[in-house]
Length: 319
Image 1: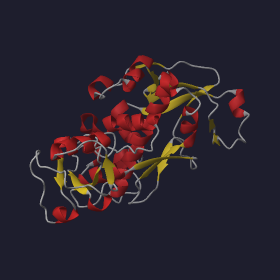
Image 2 (image 1 turned 90 degrees about the vertical axis):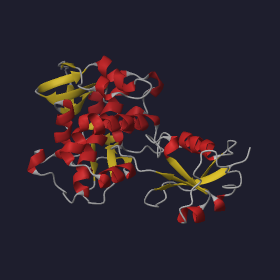
Image 3 (image 1 turned 180 degrees about the horizontal axis):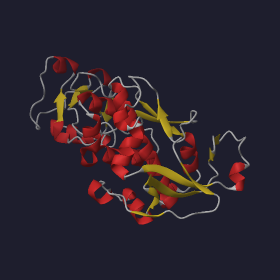
Image 4 (image 1 turned 180 degrees about the vertical axis):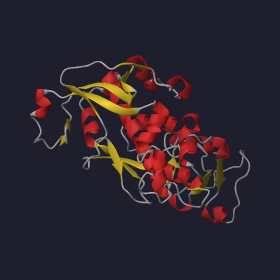
C-alpha cells in the first residue's frame, strides 16, 4: 500500500500542518480528500467538509494556482515522496471554534467540543464581542495548557497581550482527572470536563478583546468580560463545589497543592452563581457527554436545582 504525502495550507497561503502522509490506496482527488479529512477530522478540519478541500499536484502547481479541478482527477503520479507533497487547501471556517490538538488528552478534546458549542450558542459571543474574521482565525490558533495557577487565577488565565493565543488551565484539574476512571463517564468526570470547557470559554472572551487592543475589560462588560459572557450564557457564573476535607487541608505543603485547591478535595457539583447558588442537575450535565454531535438546543438553557448545603464544602469562585 503506497503512501501519499501532502501538506494542508490555508487560504492565506500559510501552512496549517507540516508535511504528512496517508497510507490508503488513493488514485483520485476525491479519495484523497476523504482520507485527509478523516485523518484531521478532530482537529484542523473539524467542521470542514471533504468536498471543500482543494488539491494541487505539488507546491509549483499551487504557486501557479493550477488545481486538480475534477474529483476524478488522477493523483497516482503525485505526492509519492515528502519532497513532492500534494498541497491541500482548506477554506477558512466561518464558525467560531477552537481547534483540538492530537496531543490533547481525551477529556480536554471533549471540553473543547463543549466550549465550541458555547462559542456559537445563539450568536451571543459574536454579537457581544463583535467577532470578526481576525477573531475566527485567531481562535483556531489558540492552544490550551495546564499550569500551576497564578495569583488570583484559580480556574484559568491568559496573558494580557494583544498577541496572546494560549489559555492556561489550573493543573489541579488535570491532576484530579488522572485520579479517576475516565471510561466510567462519572459525575466527577463530567464536572471537570464542564468546568474546563467554561474556563476555556471564559478566557476566549478575554483574548478576543485583547486582539482588539483592549487589555482590560471595559465598563460595557462590567469590567470582567469572561464573567459577563458566562452570565449571558448561563444566567450566572460557573463554580466548582468541593469538599474541603481535613486531609486536603493537611496537604498544603504538597507540590500538588494549587493555592486553596488540592487534588485530594472531592468534587461534588458544578454550581451556577446567579440569583443565588444553584447546581446543574446531574442528568442535564450528562447531556454534554452524549455520543455524537452536541446540539446546543438540548444543552441550553441549563437545568438547575437547589444548591445543597454540605458541611465542609465550598463553591470556589474564580478569584
